[in-house]
Length: 280
Image (cartoon, rainbow, N blue to C red; front, side, top):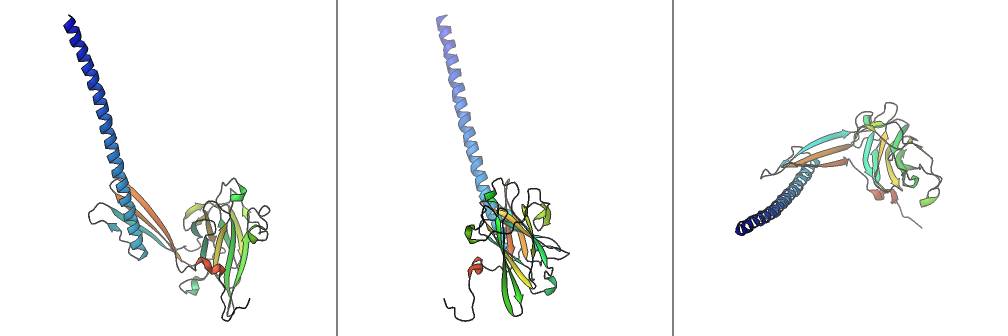
């Protein structure tokens, strides 16, 4: 009887050891499978992103055929939107960081005068709705370059949704207060329908306006900006949006690029141009 009891105990101990060993083995196998799956997804993600970037690079040179890797491991499809904005549509820039410059042509950059914006006023929209801290709401500095006879001149404007608190800061006089609200009506832009902005201002344009440059100020997070034509006018086509979707295995990555024709570098706003000598 004693021998049978000891044999039964040994069997139970062996079963316990086997169960523990099996549990550890399954955990190791499961972790290994998870690690392999994660590494595979990371590798596929990198391949998909590289394919999407390659698709964008081809699109910027006018080839929208997409990309297929030689090994067949990754591919990309390109979806171009060109000649933006459409007739009577607002041109929206991707979100701008503090001190970023948005340039929008009011005369056709290709020289077609029939496409020039000839209205005397235009609406400017900018900012994000739902920002609780007033000091984070973006102000905007505007430069409009226009032609007067044979001379080129510029008109400057400054608009601030928080003018009293920031009056005089940054070297500005108190800016004109725009119409700002978290319930400002939505508009249709080159980025889509029902686009929301925090501020709107109606801007009087000088005659023969050529282009507008807008610089966001004070904002901590990037914020959108759009120029909306009025009175059945249209902003000349000047931008393209390229969307490239790369695929590798079960992973997709998307890259989107906003391209504007003939942009003047940011330092243009601070440069001095003179046909003769400059005396200090």
